Length: 213
Image (cartoon, rainbow, N blue to C red):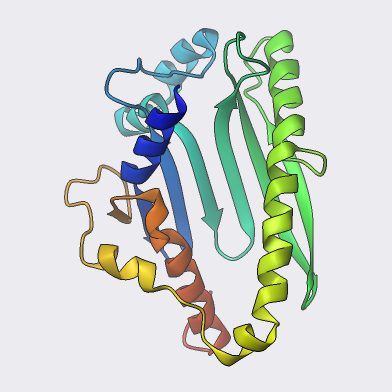
């Protein structure tokens, strides 16, 4: 998918507040893209046999899906190419975030693939997962630098003086998607930060004793 198309889809794909701190974002395929783009054609009949209509629609039109189940379990599912000419290969990454202290977190990481998939396809999905979301993966290395920098900034002089700024969410708070087909409240951009904001608000309520889980 061309980069400009990806950017446009990210701008207009939903961020979802499912409630109780659970939240997700997902990149929807553009209308001209075929169903199940990025998935193994051999697995499509399996999805059609085992998923209900709503689940099939979500799978068929969602290219990338990122979700966190409160408080510390996350998963990401997407498709990535090995190079500029090969077909994209899907992977599913499941992880838990284990706090070791105020400034340190340990990540437990698993890669999942359907047991019905061919062995060659399982290996390709595993390799894509290792190259992207793992201790040596491109995406995780990039994200880890940002996380560390944000942490340092929040503990600095200016960060300690002012509250975290979530003014970017104001534009979207009163604009939920009326006909969203899934559970929860969806907002019209993954860039809205509404899903992250919902998780943090619930976490704050739990820490204040206003919620138990």
